[in-house]
Image 1 (cartoon, rainbow, N blue to C red):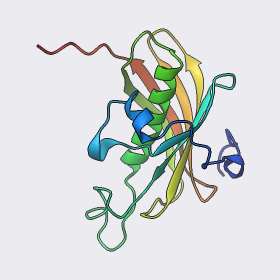
Image 2: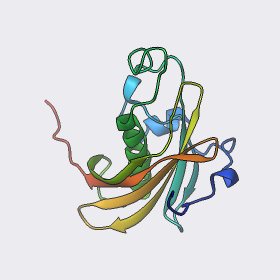
Image 3: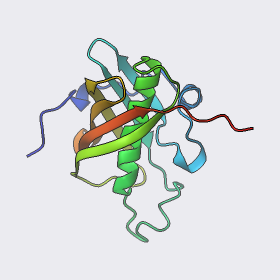
Image 4: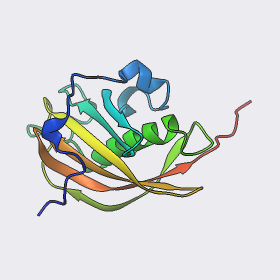
Length: 164
């Protein structure tokens, strides 16, 4: 049985983009094949939640090999999508005193359905715990309003060394 919904996916307006890919790139450092978000459609600091989506295409790097003739988005990329959405929230809401948030861990992750090319993966994240050196968000992913993923994502502040 799936867990209670953070937010009813049927109420999410994916046409109301608050941050497009260019705006996401101003915050998140991932580029090229590792960009896991297409847009952010809701940021709610009062409820400490964020909603974004990834339009999965036949041209995504993993499609050719996972699995040929029946491509399924790898679970690790579902986790990465949740991590990037959480990171965007933590950075834009200034949860930490840094502009770089790393993945500190995953807990209670469940894959509940398939994500295939042509799908829109809608991810909802809600911050559930905030400490000075870590924050934890609970994430749920949906395709066609059906939960395909849920789990807890831990974000940690990083201070990358400046390269000479």
